[in-house]
Length: 338
Image 1 (cartoon, rainbow, N blue to C red):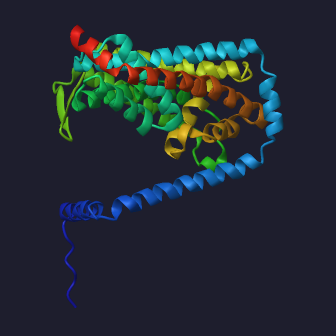
Image 2 (image 1 turned 135 degrees about the vertical axis):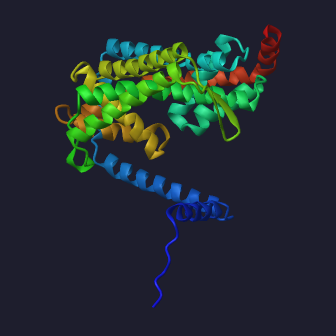
């Protein structure tokens, strides 16, 4: 009996890559991918619906109505400050690409895209709105892609540092069903901090400053720009945490609130549920009940959504319509100021 000759490891890897590439080219693959994603969404929605049925909504709404007006106003002020800070992210992209759109216009586009992103997801907000508005104002697709990429990198750079510090020094007591121990949680925190530091070191000392990825040229910014990215992003996430801390009325320590919010942000993103609806609530209940009741936590998260998600979206819709109506004038003004 002749023994089978096993292909060398590099050859097996090439065969596997070729098989995957050929699979993605099949005419039915895009539909299969959509069906899988849709099935996952339905599964998540069913789970959230079942969970929602166990909530005493009358008690939740009573808790929301009992909120002091002063607390809501302070929370709204922090939410507005966070949106203002985030609106500066695309100014880094403006500096990076050298385009000449006026700074107020860039900040308005960033605000609109962020509000839509929070409520309708990345493809609609972070990408779709930027592509729509920037292209209407005359920016080339390659420039828009670099602006979007820079803004996303800025956002997650600060997340890595703040989440890493929170997980390292204020680790949360995670539910046993999450299968993540305290040591693993701290290791994750250390890895996130190292990722942020590695980016800064790369910007400071890398001899290679340019790469090409999928036909797009990527230039590494200097340390000063990277520092601004980190500072603005950390400020934004920190103010988001302050918003939630205020709405929890100081009943939970700020580092703990920030850590839960950072976990909830990623959980909502991975769930693919628009606005992470129900996911953020579930994370806060899983990690902070007790000491707080489910009712109090859900009421606080819904108030957070009101001041951080829904109110800015209402403003963003109006601002978007105004920008669409005046797109030609804005484009002409931008060209004249170039």
